[in-house]
Each structure stands twice: as C-alpha cells, then as structure tokens.
Length: 315
Image 1 (cartoon, one colour):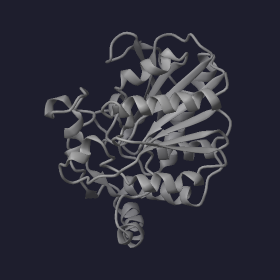
Image 2 (cartoon, helix red, strand yellow):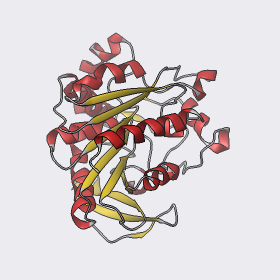
Image 3 (spheres, rainbow, N blue to C red):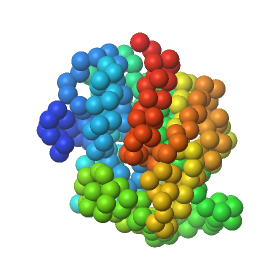
Image 4 (cartoon, rainbow, N blue to C red):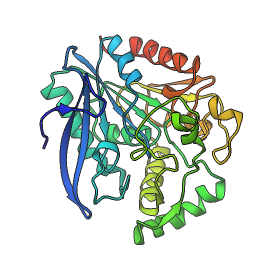
C-alpha cells in the first residue's frame, strides 16, 4: 500500500510518504501523505486541500503542533505531490474515488503512528469530499473542521438546476470535455509574484487554475446532491466561512476581505445537513481559504478553530 517516509519538498521537519492506489483508466495512481515531524502526541490532525490546490500552509501545521497535535496533510490523487506526468490534473469521475486514500491515510495515522484521536480539517472541495467519506465510513474520525467548504455551485438557479441535469449527461459521455475555466483573480491575489503574501508551487497551484472538466464537475454536483439530502456524520463538525462573498471574475477591494470563490450563504445554509452536531462560525474579513486571510482575520479564524477544538475534541 505505501512506501516509507522520505524528505518532503517543504524541507525539515516535513516528510512525505507515497500511498500506492489502484490504477485507473489513465494508469498508475498515487496519493501523498505529509507529516510534520515524528509522532509525539496521541492526537493528530489530517489536512485535506481543495481544487487546484495542495498542502503548503506550514503556518497552519505549526499552529496545530503548538497546541499538542501531530500534523498530517494528504495530497489527493492527481493533485500536488501526487500528480504524475501521464495524468489529467485533478480529474476524478466520482468523489468516492478519494475514499481509498482517505482510508489509507487514516490507517497510517491511527494504526501505524499510534494516534487515538483524529481530527480532519478540510478546505473547499476537500470540505465536500471529507464529510461524504465520513458519512460512508463512520468511526475513524473524532472531529471535522471545514474551512469554506464547497456545498453548492456558485451560480444562478438555471445553472444549478437545468445546467446540472445537462452536465450529468455530458459528464458521463465525455468526461474530459472542458466546461469552464477558473478566473485568475483569486490566485493572483494570493501569490507573492503577483502582489499576494504567499509562495507556493505554481505548477501544482497555477494562477489560472486547471480546466474544469465535465466528468469532475459532474462528480462534484452529485456530491452536492447527496449532501442536500442530508448526511449522518457521527462526530462534531465545525464549519467556518467568511461573513461576505465577493465577485470571482474581477479585481475588487473585496478580494482581501471576502470569499471571492464560493457563496458563503450556501455554506451556512447547508451546514445543518451534515449531521446532528454542527457549529457554524463566520469570520469577518476572511477570504476563501481562511487560513490564508490577511490579519486579523487569519488569527480570528485560528482562534475560533482552537477554541472549538478545546471543547469538542477528546483530550
């Protein structure tokens, strides 16, 4: 299933481990588990990224470690460290595909590294993928923290209804058909080379994103529909979102103080569909990835996460 730990691209104290997965139609498939240092606690957190994304937020790992958690992150198949030369970036045809690497990562964290408590923190698309996995696999996760989870399409009613029905057919027949491209505004607002505050690998998280393919978006919309019907997540859940959404397709002053990728009201409205123990926190001044928000919103977000964790995560 897995190889051994080796030095990660982030340098010390990070190590990476390849998780060998079942091949798909494109060939070899892997995921990558990243660890911050050797296990030193009985509690661990596993971070799962969003679309056009990978783990690079070392300040987030440091914050969890400072509170007594061992930190892990998972680069899903065809993302970041796990993207192989023959693969279509970020492509999946069902969100259930990710169960395999999530199962494998949880086994490493719990069984091999000996942790008794596992918190999963997930962002954006990861914030949809992970609750669906926990709903199908009750037991291994003790708490969920969702950072701006993608709970519905940020589009008008026609696209969310008729458009989704059309996509369901097109995505099945021609899964690699390009159906959209992502605006570059958000990425340009983040990256240091274009005036932002963060440095990351543009090969894995390009400013212009990767093409949005019909099969992938069909899988996401099916995940949205499953969530809308209601899940039975059996652990406490924290859903964090900005107080404000902004335009995704043009530069504005909201880029540094609002979610300019998704509709934050969708997050708040659908949070109650996750299960019986859900807390919603709105972060004033937060951007889409709340962990990358300018201060003081970033600190406010982390303070809320750790305050909640102190109450809901087993000691």
